[in-house]
Amino acid sequence: MQGELETALERVCRSRVTVIGAGRTDAGVHATGQVIAFEVDWKHPLDALGRALNAALPDDVAVRDLELCEADFHPRFSAKTRTYVYTAYVSAVRQPLLRRFAWQLERWPDLAVMNEAARRLIGRHDFAAFGSPPSGRAEETTVREVLRADWQCADDRLWFTIEANAFLFRMVRRVVMALVRTGWGECDPDVIEAMLESRDAQRIKGLAPACGLCLVDVKY
View 1 (cartoon, one colour):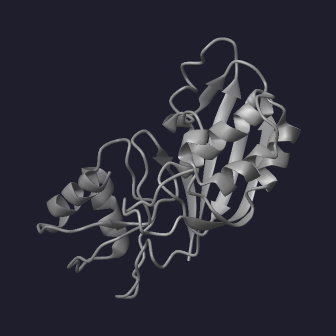
View 2 (tube, rainbow, N blue to C red):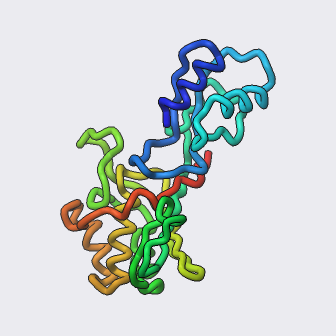
């Protein structure tokens, strides 16, 4: 994604431009609320830059809005919270129109049980069992503060919303996998606390598919 944006900026502005994002995601993860910053010499209205960039970008990437920012603004380090939404659907048969953006579950998990387990995530905890620092440096803290974590459903769809001050690499996908398994009765909601205390990533088997995850908001 960064490469596509920088290529488009170079085409439009006739100079090499470095893009800084609010965060990095796994391949296959989506974003409707990603925030980027870049410095460029542009002497025309901002909306003209937006139109030019969207004309140069591939069809699956779009700039939704542009604003001037302070020189010291940093999309990642200036952020207060980030919100992700994970989407799943329940069906015994795959749904080709949904599977690019949602995880197919072949049976219903217990929503109340998953929400009970999700409440154990709220607050300030060491999430080492659920992910690794984005930098990859072992000495970087794995403590994060979760402000919201809950499931909702309608018809055959389920949505998990989680908001935190920051996230670890693959943290949300591991959280979703652990909660769904709890909803299927494979473990008790109390196991979430045990996982947090263990700081052992080996306790969580597998990741929820990347296709269901979307970064929807970054607050500053």
